[in-house]
Picture (cartoon, rainbow, N blue to C red):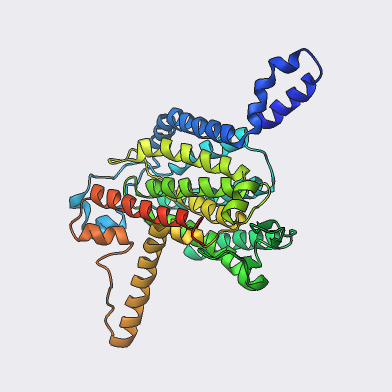
Length: 393
């Protein structure tokens, strides 16, 4: 909004005495300036809205009065009592994120598609949180309904991008050769320079797995105070770099990564996400005043998936979000092995003491804060490896 307003004023002032006086408005043309503005706006908005939303959720009695899986498994002795802590705190993140992005970004197709996905997934998460509160149990929206909604959204995104002209351009150094690629049918591999053609079916499948997988992986990680949002901030920082470089012709050509026109505006979105996330962490750090809930986790995870697809780097998300992947794999392996061994021997066996993975370490005697900080460290290492793919190819 501010970009369009500033350009309108500059066009109006062109050729008049006001042109030189209003020249500072040209700053809004720079993505770096608008990124800083988006991050600060989202942070301040989160700080300002936080106490109000927490009080509102408490007044509505949107608190977690039912025991979660960790408490049922006997982990309550190692934790601060969390009963009554309001959930749906993701509303705070989503409001700050959407407002700040709309205020500072140019509204191109990439931004609009990302915002649509965030809105849909936040709505799905809100409905799920509300269902849990009304039932006062951990069972909210049926898993089948959630997956159908997520896969439908992801399929829409994949088909939409497939029908667009080739948006990704790889400019080879030392030659005038330009490799044009479709964001869906051509796949970029980490540590490999050239796009690999995978076809429509496989390409759409990758898009769906990126969006649905990341959405649910962040959701599974959201089990300890500050864990999911802290890891989200680290991964968001990685994609802040990737989106800026993907939208910058010279930087993309130098690093030999795909240049995607318009992707630079996703940098503003990522900056707003970082600001909103930092503001939320203020209230979500141990002991948490509010929980993110599915409202935030499904939306943030899905946002990473679609951003990765839009900059033609879906597999980099697997590296940058390595901790999210491990959390999701721990659940899949635990359930799969339990069912397999029960079928074969009549008695189900477990790989981990408890899944997701963070509860396994709690069971081993780690304090909640230890688990969170150590997961942060591992997440930073994953982020470093992801950033290394920019040059090692």
